[in-house]
Image (tube, rainbow, N blue to C red; front, side):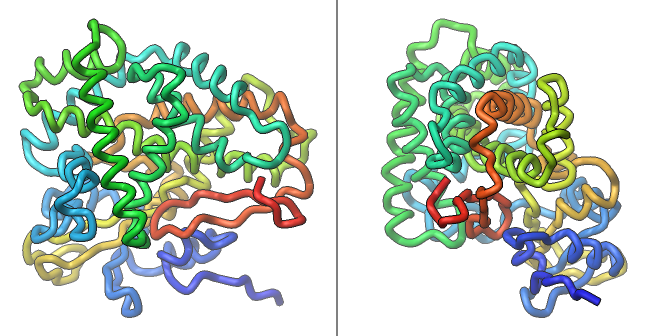
Length: 375
């Protein structure tokens, strides 16, 4: 009998080669349990995950630390502290989320897909070298273009975003955090410039229009959340593209999807191998939850990947109050990128190998060849 190599805990599972047998074990356990090693509560079953994500007593940030201490006081902290997904309440969450949701719902997805296809084809690696970078560049450049960045700025925008996003990981180094603050200030300045010069229409125009309609009048927060649209795209959509490439590499070429089948193929990856595997919540008060006494401030790991498997419904883009409004945008960009990639199928070869970037919550493959060279 072969005993599978299982990850040691649900955080290690994120970057494990195959975490899903371990996740099945979690699902067979209690709905809520305390992990003694990680010192954190863990929710894995869909019913419990859904309950947590819909319960206002579970906050996205600790009450005493709305912005991570490592980035507080700098440009990266300024953006983080204003992000809708990191806030609660009417003025800092409900109104902004409604405005962003309505603005994104108005986006012409066919135009987005066309633009993503153009950018994908323009930057498609000539060989396996650069495949990982390509998976990051296409989503953030697609959204940057949607926001009004000129083509000549897209490479810079991608670089600024890469440096900014590096600060959002608890694994970030002091050097990365310093670079992130500088990149964040540049992104804020550039986004303010785009807001000031916009002539109506476009994604920025839609966000500003809907912000006014719902009473969201915090100009700096609006700018920060426009930057946030790019940052969420950077990791989540890059991970979705990467995990779709992994799914293709594991599929016999004779059974690869046709052009019409790519969107449902990507949707299956969202369900079965999501780029965002977990998220965290913090108890805002002492409470009884799922038969357990939870003290104020207690952290909770919400395992989205297991909830998806348990329910047959995708949880990787969140659920309830903090569901990501950009899911359809992300899947549209990923589908366009993968469609372009399949015009050069030699990039996905039998020699393609991958490991996963160090992360506590995002499952993002980095590709190499059998010889170990970056792909």
